[in-house]
Image (tube, rainbow, N blue to C red):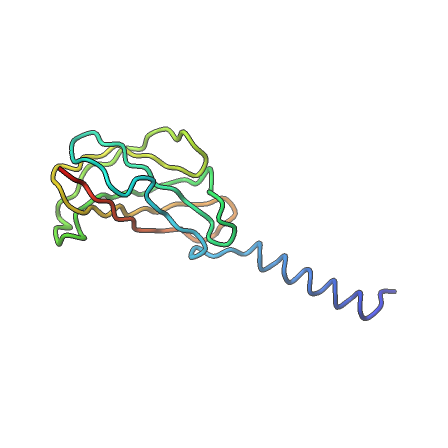
Length: 130
């Protein structure tokens, strides 16, 4: 038979484990690897996906939607093509895109993370310079 103290400690531990295992989509963030780059065609744009709770990069996510446009400068209709590139670092996801003019570009991403039932979405702003 377990003592009341042991039972309470076990219940508290299981509760903490359950909370840690149930990360929500809001527990992840995308951030630019390079927030500023030169404008041009065939630019490599990289983002890092991080777990906010642990601060660690999230490898092996499946990015199933990516969009690059100039929404931050009021030109959301200025959309650029986006093609995924192989990742060179765990938790970093790279894309080939065009940044045809100087200004701010918004990268909108949707990803599935293993063990996370919700889709993780994020918006990252990068700046293209002359």
